[in-house]
Length: 260
Picture (cartoon, one colour):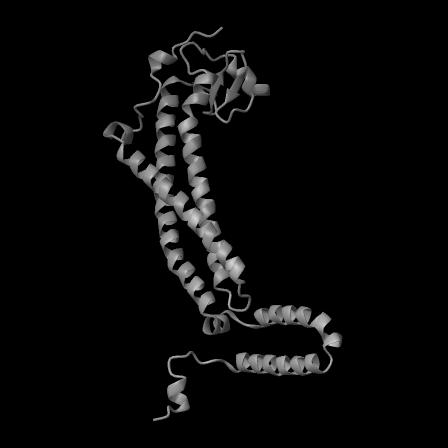
C-alpha cells in the first residue's frame, strides 16, 4: 500500500515558513542557472561558482540556529556534543573555584601567622622587611618613603624576617592566587562559548563550532588537572594547618639572621 504524505514525512522536524521559502528560492535559482549554462555556457561559467559560494554564505547567515539544527544532521551532532560537554566543564570549574579559593584563604592565613611572629611592622600595621642590600619595603614590596621610611629606622630588624625570606615565604600564596585566577578566566571563557553556541540569530559555522569544541576540551583537561592538585593539597592539610601554621613555614629560629 502506498504511504501517505504524512507517513512519508513522519519523524522529520517541521520546517518554519522562512526555511521553506529559502529552499524554494534556491531550487528556482539552480534551475535558472542550469538553463543559462546550457544555452550559453561561456556567458555564465565564469561567475557561476562565485554566485554559488556567495549564496551558500547568505543561506547560512539567513538561517537561524533552530533551522540549521533541523536541516543539517552533521551540524546538529556537533552542536549536541558541545551542549553535552558544557555543563560537565562548568560544574568542574565551579567546584575547582571553591577549592582554589579555600586554598588561597588558607595560604594567606598561614602567611599572616608567620608574619605576626617574625616580621617588623609600621605604626599603621603594615609589615616591613629589610633586604641584604639595606633596602626596606612593605608587605606589597613597595619601597618606603617619607614618614614610613623614618618610622622604619626605629625598627630593630634583628631576628626579623628578611626581604629575601619574605619573597620565598609568600610564593605559596602567589601560586595559589594565580591558579584561582586562571580557573576563573577559564570559567568566563566557557560562559562565552555557551553564549556563542546558543545564539539563535547568529549561528556559528561548522568550523567555528569545531574550534569551540576543541577549546572546550583543552579547558576541561586543565580543569581536571587543577581539580586533582587541589584535592591532594586540601587532603594534606593537618589540624596544625587549620590553626593557621603551615608545616613548610620557615621557623623563627631559621629566620634569626642578624642584619646591619
